[in-house]
Image 1 (cartoon, rainbow, N blue to C red):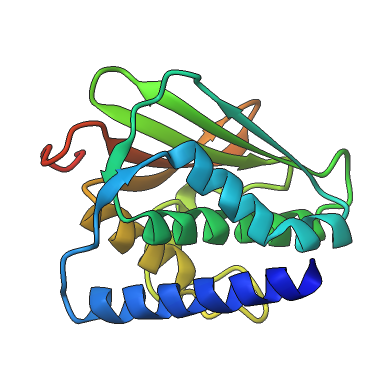
Image 2 (image 1 turned 90 degrees about the vertical axis):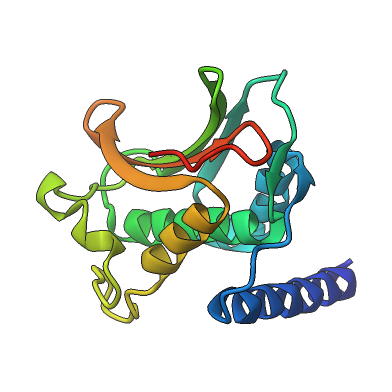
Length: 188
């Protein structure tokens, strides 16, 4: 079991590195009809050890009738892993209440699917919302400040949009909106 997970991680890392190098070279993402719920569940499997070690619960809520999306599944998985790891880091600093992450996957009208990542951590001040997507901006002692900048660029390359808002009683929530239709214009 452990050896299988190690092999899966190595294969995934190779796919991510290949995808990022193609992305950096300006190549179009490898898009395929993708079940985003499966992508999110796979991403959760990749960080399950961290969730247990940090004693954080995670809940994935999704609509049951979501269509497949024309996206690069490895790139979308990378965004979800990054957002979830950021939530884990925020919760590590939190000393109050239940430590949980909620990922929602819901249809947003007739044009998009919204993947949201919320946690019970301290949140980000609204005045910092746009700055967190700038390269080299970080709230972590050891962070590089590249994760959200890269994630936003990947979202846009897949025709989507990544942004942050206050919701759920004032908590910070990151939203990844991806278009429903193949070839649809990017989400504004």
